[in-house]
Length: 201
Image (cartoon, rainbow, N blue to C red; front, side, top):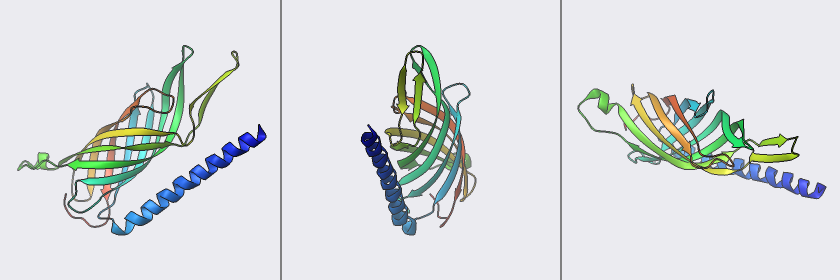
């Protein structure tokens, strides 16, 4: 049993190191070629009552004129709900996500419409939180998420641009599967600041 637990810990440690190395290589590769990095803060309201969270992310386009880009983020959400043994349980969750993005900007003579932009995101979410519930009366335990679980993530965002650097956004995020939870979703509002070259969209 001790050897088995040691193997699991070593495997988990190596997995984390691999993820960190991959993220570092990714950032080192894209940073020198970055067109105009965007930093974003989002505040989320989850589907459960009292569920709140936030996202810190970095985004860039693959090329100056391309509608395609990438987004890497750290995310925290509280009170992710699940029902087990006729009991409602709630847990907090932390993830790192890598998303491919596609942006559409309407063309219009109307200044308000011209300041809008729509974005689709799709990618993977890496779970950083182990959530386990122990039912002592029944001598049972159940994991609802484990570290390094990988799940799909989707988002739709509407941006409103105030100027070349500053945007606000509203959107929805959805995880069709979220470890052992059912599908998890949230609505959010955010603020984006663009660094680097300030060319238009």
